[in-house]
Length: 434
Image (cartoon, rainbow, N blue to C red; front, side, top):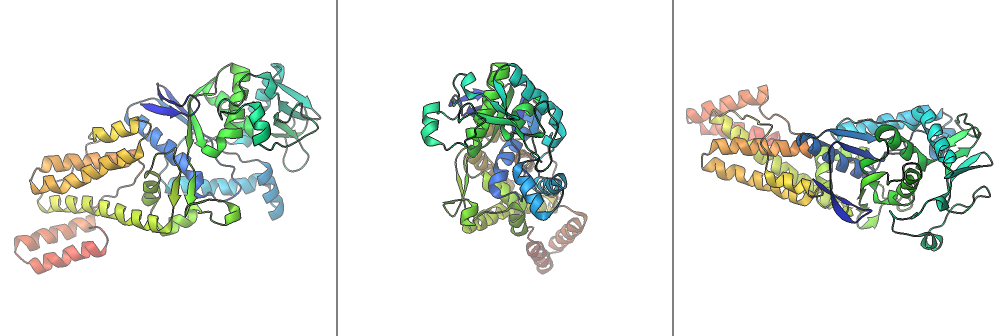
C-alpha cells in the first residue's frame, strides 16, 4: 500500500504495524460535513488495513477543553466538561450513524498529567521557555520550521498574521501552556492554566505511538499552523518528524463557495442524516480523490442518492431472482475484485474503487442471463466486501417476511399465475427493494 505524503510530496510505502492518528474535533458545537470527511477517509484506510490482515492501531483525539468550549459553556451557565460531554456524545452518535469503526479516542481532559510532563520535557530540552506563567515553544530553537507547510519564517512574517504577546521571545512562538483563572484549569509547575491546542496532539501521539506515528493527518486547514507546530515539538524532543506519512484531506465547498459561518452555508451532518441515508453521505466522499476539494450541492446529492439506490436495487433484484430459482446466496468474505483493492492501495484512489464496484454490479445481470450462478454469487460477495471496506451498510434482503413473499412468487410462477407474481413484484418495488 502506498500513500501520498504531503511533506515529501511523493507516495510512500506503508509498513506494518500500521499506526494512524487523525486529529479530532473540538466538541463545542455540531459537526458539519467538512469535519467528517477526514474521519471517513481514515476509516476506509483502517478497514482496508484490517482486510489485508495488517496490525493496525488507530487513535482519534477529542479536544474536550478549550477556550471556545469555556466561552460557550459560560454563556449557557453550565459546567465546561458537562458541556463538551454533550457534544462528544452527539459526535459519537454521528460516527455510529456513519458506520465508523471503533477506535481509541482519548480526551484531552483525561490526559492532563501526560501533557504537563510532555511540556516539561520541552522546557528541559531548552526548546520551550516559561514567561509570565505561560509556556511557549521557541520556534527558533529548531531548524526548518515551516517545512511541512513549505514556508520559511520570512514568508510567514508577511503571509500570516500572528497573535502578539509581550511574553513571547518572537511572534511565531506558540503557547504550550496558558496561565488562566477563567474557566476550568489545572495546577502545573508554572501556573494554574490549560494546555495549548498544538501540544495536545503532539503529546498524545508521543503517548500512544512513541517517537513517530506511521500515518497522521486531518483537514488541509490543519497543515499550518497545527500540524507544523506538532511536528516542531516532536523534532525538538525526538529529532524526527512526528509522522512518516502526512495525509491532508481537501475542503468541501457548498455550491462552489467556501463553507463558512459568515456565509451561513454550513451543512450539519445531523441535518443531512434527516434527509439521506448514511450510505449516500459516504458515497459522496468517494467521488473524488481525498486530497482534492469536493463540491456539495442539493442536486448532486439527489443524483447520488438515486445512483446508489439503483446500485442496491440491482443487487437485491439479483439475490431475489437467485432465490426464486432455489439458489442460495452465500457470502465469501475473501472474495473481492482485485482492481478495487489495487485502487485503494494506490493512495486510496476512490474514483477507481467506485469504478470497480460498478463493474461488478453491471456484471451481475450479464452472468445471471448466462446462468453462471457461481459467478453471480462471487460477484455479490465481492460487492458486499467492497461495501464493508468503504463502510457502506448492506441489509439482508432475504428477511423472513421477504422470504415468505418470494416463496409465494415462486409458487405463482410455477402455477403460471403471472398476475399474482406481478403483484408480488410490485409489492417489492413499492418497498423500494427492487
